Structures are given as C-alpha cells and as structure tokens.
Image 1 (cartoon, helix red, strand yellow):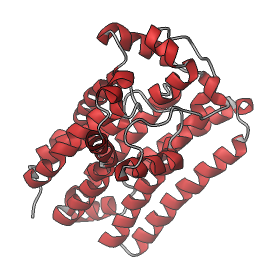
Image 2 (cartoon, rainbow, N blue to C red; image 1 turned 60 degrees about the horizontal axis):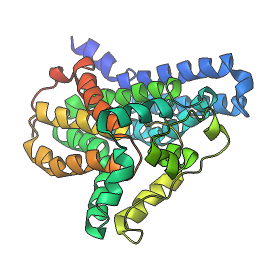
Image 3 (cartoon, rainbow, N blue to C red; image 1 turned 120 degrees about the vertical axis):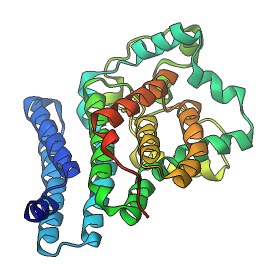
Length: 315
C-alpha cells in the first residue's frame, strides 16, 4: 500500500494532466484550422515549450522529491495561466463574437445594461477604489489559498490544485468555442448611442484585427485603478467574458475553504468576494449575466471536481 502511494506521489499531478489535455485539444484546433492563424507554428511551439516545462519539473521531482519542488510544480502551473488566458483570444477570434446575443438577453432581463449604468450611478472615488480593490483581490482567491493549503495540510494540495487549475482550463474551453468579448470591448465596437438605444448588432470578427476598448470607468488617479490598468495592459484581450472566470474561481475557492473549515480564511475572503462579484460589472469587464453564470459555474466545478472529498484542513 505504501509502495503504491509512493508511485502516486511521484506521478503527474492531475492538474498537470489537465494542462496536457488542454494543450492537446488546442493543438488539434490549430492543426484543423491552420490557415486561419497568422503564426500557427508559433502557437504550436508555445504549447510544446509550456508542456516541456511541466515535464522537466516532474523529472526533477522524481529525482529529488520534496515539498519545495512540489510547490514549484504547482507555481509553474499557476504562472502559465497568465499565458493560457490571453491565448484564448488567438484561438477564438476566428469564430466572431456572441456579444450581441448576450447584450440583448441582458437588456431583456434587466431592461438596461448594468455594466453601462453601474459605474455612472456610483462615480465617487471611494466606491471606485473599492471596486478595483475587489477586482485586484482576485489573486488572493487561488494563489494564497493554495499556499495556505500547502502549509496547513500538504496532503490536500494535489486535489485543491487540481480543482482550481482544471476549473480554469474548463473556462478556457468555453471561451474558445463561445467567444464573448464583454462590455468594455463590445460597447466600444457598437458605440454609446447603440448601447443606450438597445441596438445590439452583430459585430462579426471585428476584434480579429483590433483590441481597442472603452477607457475603464472610475477614479483615474486611484491606486487600485492603476493596478487594474497595469494588469489589463499586460494580459487582457477581447475574450473570456462568459462565464466570468474571476467569479467562477472565486466561488470555487469559497466553497473549498468552507468545506475545509478554514473559517479564518473564509472571513478574510468574504468582503473581497462580494466586491469582486460586483466589480466585474462595474469596470465593464463582464455583463451581469456573466457574473451570475460564474457563480453557478463555480458551484458546478466544486461538485464535479470532487470538492466534497475534501476534509477539514489540519494545523
């Protein structure tokens, strides 16, 4: 029994296997739609490079198994999300945009566009900073949660990492095949007059050639506003609006820490979680239905990926 356990410990993490599967699926997509890309060979090589990094760290762990090297393996997977996320834009821009459908449904559901009205209704600098602070706190939810599990209950690190990383990749699959750019991009494409009039036309492949978007609303001199703009310039693309991965992963993490009875961590995340959910609409990154779908999706991820198997966190 201990022998089998040792083999399991030195095998690939389920999160790493999820990365391999995602890389393979996207490689197949690139191969089947080769002529639609400007640099398909470059996209393939990037996947080979990232997967090779994962395999290299696995080899190091097999030779010198330790908690530090395990943390490096997990950290590498988290770091690579910064590439996989904007990469969805390269894959989905060939399919056009479903924003007109989502904006129209939003209009039918609320009678207006929450992403357009929200920031205008609360223009104060304090409220603006609260919203952007909530949005930036996103990284608390998965990065610091994994670190907390690493130090408090190392045995559950593999499963928690699997749930979070796989949750991201499942989101990315949706982003590729159902492209939604979000209000900040779509409203730029159709113009404010069309937004106010409720005229949500199909923009086709408008964003296959441009990444222009509306200027972010709120207090321009705010500290957290600046941090958000920096992150936006680094990795944001006209992609990945539905469902909101911010809300989905944050919801997943909230359920994880609740299941593991990490009450102190739950209290720390409670306010940022509420602010995060609101901020996705306030800064016009998402439609309100994206945030709602993100919550539902996060719950589904928790159930499907085995969240109920988690036990109370030790330490």
